[in-house]
Length: 183
Ligand code: HEM
Image (cartoon, rainbow, N blue to C red; front, side, top):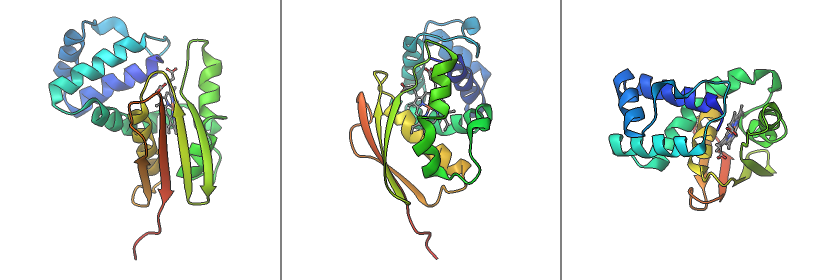
């Protein structure tokens, strides 16, 4: 997986906990501090080990951690790829266009990059389904990213995100709706 994701995981642990927690996490995962930078691609196995160990250390489930981390990733990812963002897009529009903008760009940057396939079905202006497909089984990260996008677009209180299948599968269906704000 993309080094940026590892670099952001490091920053997430350092800011939510502290630097020594990150060092401890690396050690428990059998990795060394010099392992990551944003220009390289690293084995997915390292991410699984880090998240698995982090779950043991915090008592949170791997799904909960993936969701929190996904939410945390969004501002940086959006900043990195902001040139692909169209003015006027909201959360649902961004999700609908991720496949042919952000994820397409990520795929073209490095042969080893493999963001998940997101098959999006727009049901109407206020609703869509994401069919996530990836051998990495990181549907919980996708749920977190959607929450992060809702925050980014200032829609956190009106966007509802519900996985309608198990979040751990290679194929995960996620329903995303915009509800009417309560008066
Ligand atoms: C909108 C801006 C987005 C950007 C800039 C972005 C960028 C990226 C990048 C750089 C990766 C790493 C790919 C790799 O290492 O091969 C990635 C992976 C991933 N993306 Fe996105 N992404 C965006 C939106 C989304 C959305 C809307 C979802 C889901 C709803 C999503 C779900 C994921 C997941 C779950 C992964 C982890 C890898 C996997 O499951 O196979 N992303 N994305």
